[in-house]
Image 1 (cartoon, rainbow, N blue to C red):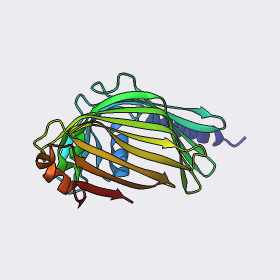
Image 2 (cartoon, helix red, strand yellow):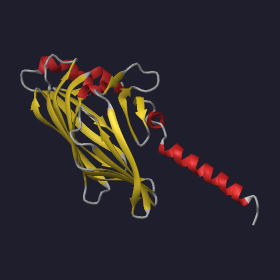
Image 3 (cartoon, rainbow, N blue to C red):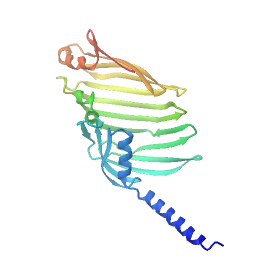
Image 4 (cartoon, one colour):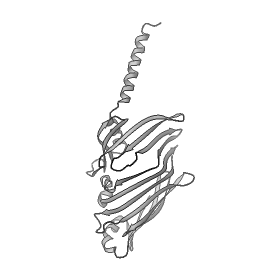
Amino acid sequence: MNPRAPKRLAWIGACLGLAIALLAFAPARWLADTVTRATSGQVQLVNARGTVWSGSADLMFTGGEGSRDRSALPQGLQWRLGLGLAGAWPALALNLRAPCCTPDPLAIRLRPHWGGVEWHLGANRSAWPADLLAGLGTPWNTLDIDGLLRVETQGLALRTDRGRLNLSGALVIDAVDLGSRLARVRPLGSYRSTLRSTADGNSATLTLETLRGDLRLQGQGEWVGGRLRFNGFGEAAPGAEAALTNLLNIMGRRQGPRSVFAIG
C-alpha cells in the first residue's frame, strides 16, 4: 500500500468537507448577486440576510444601470430553497413569502430536462401594490400608477425545449382601482388580463378587458415561441373624455376617440 495514500485521502476528505460546508452555509448575498446580474439590475435583493437556502431581503425594483427610479416592496421578501429529485433529474424547490402580499407562499419548482428546463408555479393567489412598477423606469415612471394587482396562477409552467418556449396553465391579473398622476379621474377603473395556454401548449392567448371604470381598455394577442403580439385600445367613457385626454395621448396612437397601442 502506498504510504502516501492515507494522507491523500485525508486531503480529499478535507476538501470535500470544506466544499459541502461552503455550499450549506453559502451567504444570502451570493443569491442577491445572482439575481442582480440575471435581471441587469432591475430586480435587486438588498440587505440580504441568512443563507442561499434560507434567508430574507428587501426587494427593490429599478430602471437598471444609471436609472434613478426605485421602488421597494413593503416588509421585504423571505425564501426557502431546497434541492431534491424529479425523476432522474435534480430539481430546485423555492418557496417565496412576502408578508405584505402572499397569504400563502409562492411555490416554484425548477427542473432541468433533455434540451432545456421547466419552471412550474403552483396554484396561488397574491396581491401586490401597483406603484412598485414605477421603479422599473419607462413607461411606468411616467404613468406613475397606483392601486392593487391581484395575481392568480393556475398550474402555470414555462418549459424550454431546444430553444422553443412552451407554456401551460394560466395567469390572471386583476388590476383593481388603478390611478395615475396623468389623469384627474380617480380611480381610472379595474381591469383583467388573462394569459392562457392553448391545448397543445405551443402558444397562449392574452386578453385584456375592463371590469369597471371611466377608462375603458380592451385588447387581445398571442404568445408564440416566447414572442408576444398584442393589439389593444383605450377610450374614455361618455362624459370623461376631457379628463382622460392627456393619458390617452400618451398611451398610444390616437384614432378619433380611441388610443391604439400594440406590442410585438
